[in-house]
Image 1 (cartoon, helix red, strand yellow):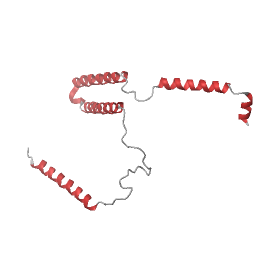
Image 2 (tube, rainbow, N blue to C red):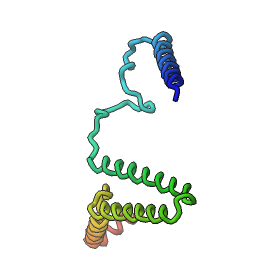
Image 3 (cartoon, one colour):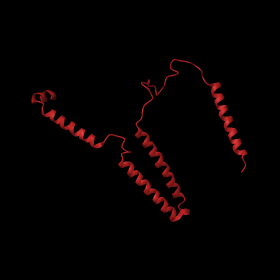
Image 4 (cartoon, one colour):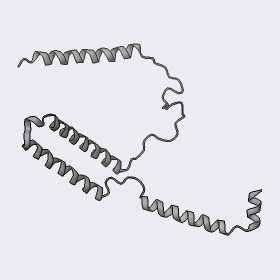
Length: 150
């Protein structure tokens, strides 16, 4: 296999990158205005630092997305070639899908997919607040009710 096409391709890439960098240096603007170094986001003045700490569950969700995305590509590639692989390929992809489901159930039960507030806690707080507001409304005198209607 000849090597010269790879060398030629690498040379062309290096020449293009060098050319683009040189042109941006020559044609680029150089000024030191007051707002040059400040961040600009849709015309809104920035406040605070852009260095936010994300919880580790954010990265776990991202990794799970990438893993399941790659596995989807593998299943699609099997679907494209299912004529050639036959029943052996079907058995292999079936085992693969069962393992995927087992991992998904495991992650779900361990709470890896729970990154928001607990729904039961929200419902309890809502019911408590509603009960308190009903108790508050019952404590209002008829005179206060008439004043509120006027």
